[in-house]
Length: 466
Image: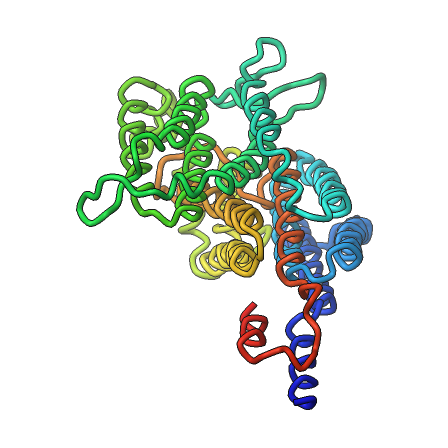
């Protein structure tokens, strides 16, 4: 029995390894990818390595090392894969933005590196301050109220500004900010806290239709409220992307919390009804749909060139082919807003189908690791938080890449960690910090887990699976 307990204790120590060495190794690879891509851009465009490669690489390395040291100190059992993936995506995004800068003589990459510094700073602050993700439940309604205020700020007459048809920005002096990116994180916290308290009532079945238990009518209030909020964002701010993101996010978390397929049926019905109403009565939505339906009718006639983004992206990705033209060898500058909304089109041209699929796989790994943390998390709030944050990233990537590749109408969202934009980059670094905090709590050995004669093989198997 003593020998069995010793073997069990050794197995538990193996399962709960911190894996910070593996994270450091992957971060070195991510740094090589980011700095190497930056160097390849200089070689492709000017035939020489950029003269600031040392300072750029040193800055990038300092940020990554600072993030790694913080994780090692305050979240030692956190997932070892999330941070390297994010570092690699951010490095590739900086290199592609720099490539656009060289063609258009702009300085977006330098500004993006500054925003990355701010994002990593908030990433570190979040991990240091938020030592237990469960305290976020205390701020459920505070976060919800703050999110509503942030969503209303762009409608203010002085600071609110309309950019590219969507009123989602606020300008204070020389600074501009998109409050919806912060509201996204706060809404996930609000949804998770609310569903933890009320999921039992929301899970009760009502009328059964076509072998599906629909929810009770008295429980439709939350989803109707979120539906109205999403329609309000679409009607007053013309922000199709955020409207889809917020409603889809709430629907995913509601289904995960209640395990009732009836909510998906209700949500799909509300989505279809809302889509029809907005198409019929809102010109901005109708314009986006018609542009998607026949983009060639809106390209190249001089008076109506609204389809230029999509068509030039299609040309560029076709020109890139399987392996791409190579960094610095294509013409991604022909795509309007290639550094922000359409950066995936620039990647498709210069890195080809292979590079594009690699980027999608990296995003898939982020979602997979987040869902893994949700599965093994020991508390309901952590499960819903991790699921919601994973859903936010998955929905945003699908909506953006779907719009760029002409699969769905354009929405105006940015590609996480790749696109130029400080609001999105900073918010997504905070999302990664929360996910690492949840995974640290999920992977950390329980306080009462010791190698004693009382440990049986059933409990050992549970630890092994986690």
